[in-house]
Image 1 (cartoon, rainbow, N blue to C red):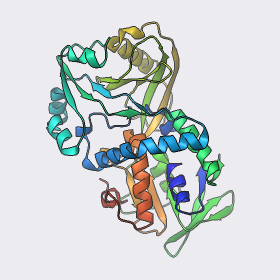
Image 2: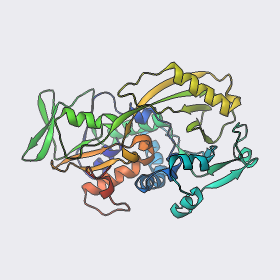
Image 3: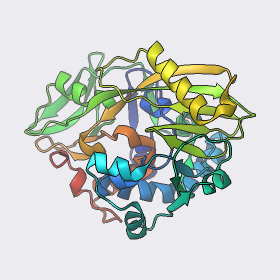
Image 4: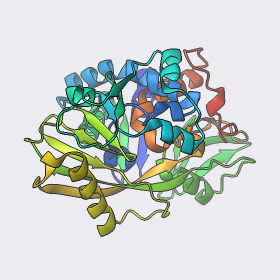
Length: 361
């Protein structure tokens, strides 16, 4: 939807096709933390998009609120990471000094010791000597953002066809000129594949080959939400690779698992119990808070979490914009900006070359 709106803003006539309903897959299912988790573990190509998106989000959220009447609830909650990060870095082989990384990238990062943790977020049980604190990290409420984007499609004249499946591509002399749907061809000067975790599968089903096919695979994440207006939680808090996200209305999102189980979106009892136990262990004030929902989504896993943004090496007019893994909402606005600049052959803040179809490894 971001891609469709950005292209429409440049004057293109845009038709958006969705096999199911727009915005109901991983973008809906995620947590909405607008920063990579432990960002110094990520490639510069990921952090560059994340940081540019952080600049774009305030105007995007306000514009969508004005157009749609839906507030995406962009909040500056900050991110408190309670893990022994030095041990994490040693285990991951990252070998990066977080403070040096933050200084080099202009990111606000503080090391908190002992009692200082409670000054940022009281009531947290962490059992370590200190924590990392990123005070400028924002969050957005995914379902509300997607409702606003869906409404914006109508406002800006994007044609949306839902519950429609593309059966093939119309290709002549190495150039795509449309898609085949229900026995007819919808003509187009360009086709953009934004099918998330299903992108590689769709290309295979459409018999679109390349020397370096996109390495996009589904990675399941399970989450839950607790109704806990009395928890006192104001900050996004991470520990053990999981997190608590306090929403504006007092609900607390708990996530997330990381499971390589193919296209299986079934929730499991084991994950439910594990997530709930984690939440209570980290924030005892959540005890007794009712669980309102438990769900699963499929992230579009890709090598090192770097998205594909580029044209097919052998088929002119066929573009891929997918593979954002755990950071689709984080990178989305900047990724879309970069995609449109590539289409328009403009020079922007970022170089599109590292994201090319045959460059992501």
